[in-house]
Amino acid sequence: MTRILLSLSSMAPLVGIIALRVSEGSITWAIALGVIAVLLGLFLPLVMLGRRSLEARPIKVAAVKDESSQVPAYLLTYVFPFAFATVDSTAVWVAYGVFGGLLIVLLVRTDLGLVNPVLLAVGIHSYAVTTTGGAAVTVLARTAPLRGSQILATPIAGDAYQLSKVV
Image (cartoon, rainbow, N blue to C red; front, side):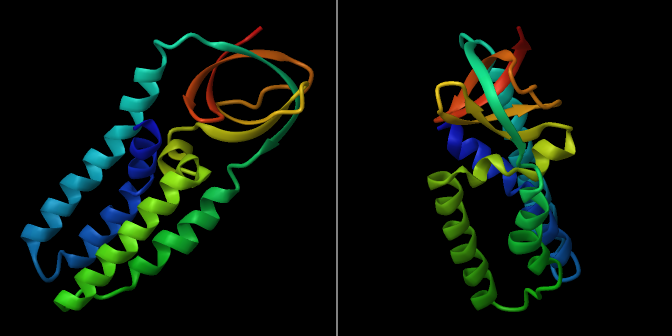
């Protein structure tokens, strides 16, 4: 469920752009989509705050790579094309729906849900961390964990963690 909520929150900018695009044709649809965009964005704090109650796990950091650079690629690939699309028929709405459904499936089945523009907008970066045991995990944090350090991290979804504390 957490992965789904993270994936849906990453779609907030996309839905917001579509709301702006349809505002010329239908203010009702624009308001409805704007409300949906805000609600999707609120899933992120819901997930992040809800996971804080879980017990943090120790992780010994062997290597760190900032993966936040994937956010602009995500925006250019999945969001930017909608800034110029027109919505003038039912077929276009259906196409948006099919694309949105496919995007949700891909976000949920991969780690793309962690490539989240909403996370980066609030200052949380995504780091690919290799542990001293050789495992690869994703750590969401405001600052990069240091190589050689030990951190406490709360599980979010799968191999993704939220940095709780540097030990």
